[in-house]
Length: 88
Length: 418
Ligand SMILES: Cc1cc2nc3c(=O)[nH]c(=O)nc-3n(C[C@H](O)[C@H](O)[C@H](O)COP(=O)(O)OP(=O)(O)OC[C@H]3O[C@@H](n4cnc5c(N)ncnc54)[C@H](O)[C@@H]3O)c2cc1C
Image 1 (cartoon, protein in one colour):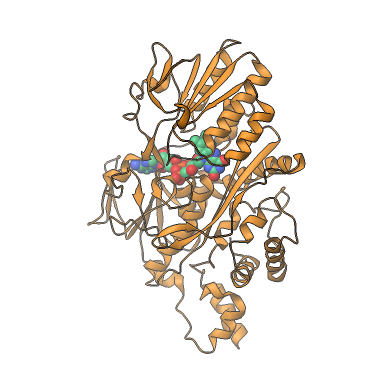
Image 2 (image 1 turned 90 degrees about the vertical axis):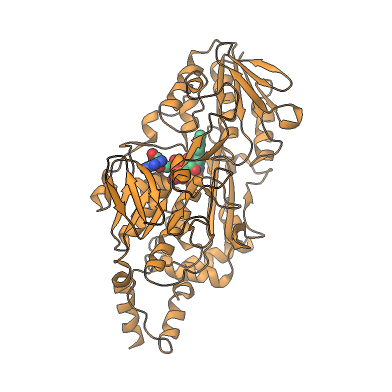
């Protein structure tokens, strides 16, 4: 019941507000096949885990480590869920 | 609510009343966007995607992108790589008015267009870019810019500077004048200096470049100066404010560029003058005495005129630089805020990202990034985030950042104009 309500909500409501920071990502991350990895097709868990690894430095990067440090775990999870849900 | 993500949405649904669909609520508002650059074209797209009636006002049929235009000047890239049109935007259903906005009556919420018509709006988003100040340096006006190009708005000026460099004598002197803050693209003049130096080194090794700067510190300074020392010794001479680098006047007949201390004879002079928001900003009453537009950091609504939102280079965006990346990021946040406001919702405080790449030579890229949020009424740096590429990075990282720079350009121009 809750799940179907959510589906209705997502289908009919183009979410006006994306979570803080989320709409900036598509500045660099575009369609698959380029040098910058596309975010399309990744699960929310994967994206959140990547952001966390960039933040801690566990995953090396050129610029994502500097950017990920601007977001808390909660903010990262919200961004990841939005992107995995098709936000751009 | 959307802030919290799906799981929280699910959890919250049982307790909270179901919000009314945004589309039904928001579709009532008429939104006009002025300026079809990185900021305006982005805002129009977001609004249209959300089901809003939106009119984009832009007089030009071709948009000439500034990012990577320094490569054109240095002969590394064709000008055609900078050209974008509005066909895709039009095809997607955005209404385009191919004319310019002449005046905006904020009280009546009406914009008057150069074709004689007017448009009423509920909210207006202004992303008109910059005006070059032809009253700031003695001797430097619009006519002088045909002799000493600024090339700070891409297009004919970019090609003019490229031609002048190509025609310069083998042992010529290039003078590049850089303004004080704030101005469009803080690292841009230093990328230009780097790529002109690269051009001289590879094509006219007996020539010199003198960079006259009206300030002492600048974006990615350590990285630029490290690269200059390694790549362009004896070619690029940098004169900061403290050493008398501030240009006070130019003489296009004598081909001289003068500071308070010295007069430099140039074979080619590129003068990047001080800037302000494009004229429509003052015509609308949204520019303050600085020439730029103060805004609310959550909604980008003007502090001076209600109902007009300003994004991109024209806005005073606190710690955010005037970049295409920032204009695009701001436009998305602003468009979402406008959708919220039209639906009677209060926009949540946003966060925004900026990343600016510069090339100091082909295959040698450096970057600066930042994350921003509203704090004390302005967009401030999120502490602990952002910064520049490491000073001690290996060549492989510089090469990677050059590739990412290209890729960023491809992605953002496809997202905005594709
Ligand atoms: C040499 C150089 C290199 C750069 N490199 C980079 C880079 O690598 N990365 C980066 O992120 N940024 C870069 N920039 C900065 C970037 O170009 C600007 O920040 C960006 O263009 C700002 O977008 P905007 O929408 O504010 O203005 P603009 O892109 O200038 O768009 C403004 C539009 O508004 C229109 N307009 C103006 N007045 C009116 C009116 N009255 N009615 C209707 N339309 C109007 C204009 O025709 C124009 O199309 C560079 C800039 C330069 C000069």
